[in-house]
Image (cartoon, rainbow, N blue to C red; front, top):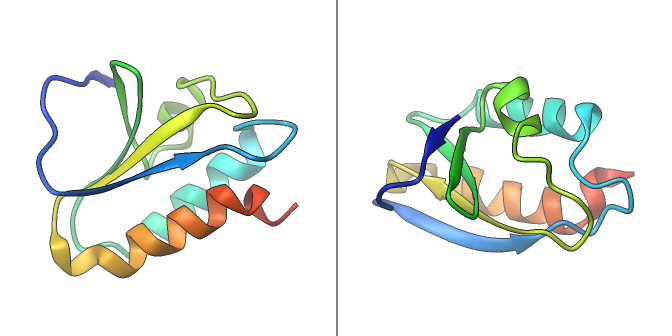
Length: 95
């Protein structure tokens, strides 16, 4: 995880709706989805920025239910990944 100094690229704000928050299964689903991306995908919570392809980084954000996150893609060609992540998170990770 790195500190969030600047935001460049396309992003969407999302809210964690899963009652269990961001846990190991949900972080694994995020990482699996992000493997399809052409460039880096980040998840930001407050001042912390996590590499979405790394489960441990995503878990380090300690996202509980109703936490606000920003999903950021470096390459606009990954817009489908951004949209899929938004749906995944806001639909409770399919649980």
